[in-house]
Image 1 (cartoon, helix red, strand yellow):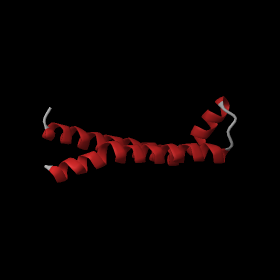
Image 2 (cartoon, rainbow, N blue to C red):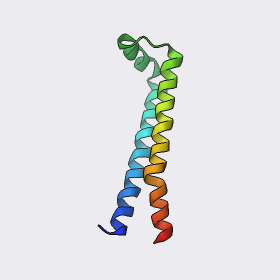
Image 3 (cartoon, helix red, strand yellow):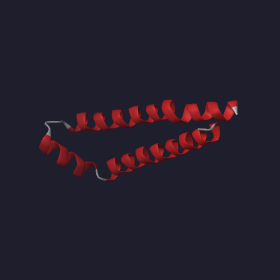
Image 4 (cartoon, helix red, strand yellow):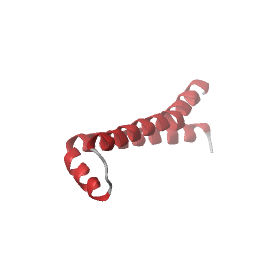
Length: 80
């Protein structure tokens, strides 16, 4: 495993993860009422709790993407 290969994997993983969270956000904005109706059948959630769970999940996902993919990618770019 070379540094170039690792850098490429980290870069593409970062792009795919940011694309995933962007699609999640777009679907959440566009289909909010449908998603809430579906989940409220399964769980007793208020709309505010539902929104908080999704926004918290998106924030945690973005932080994990930065820590696990983008920052190591940047460090390898600077080191190499």
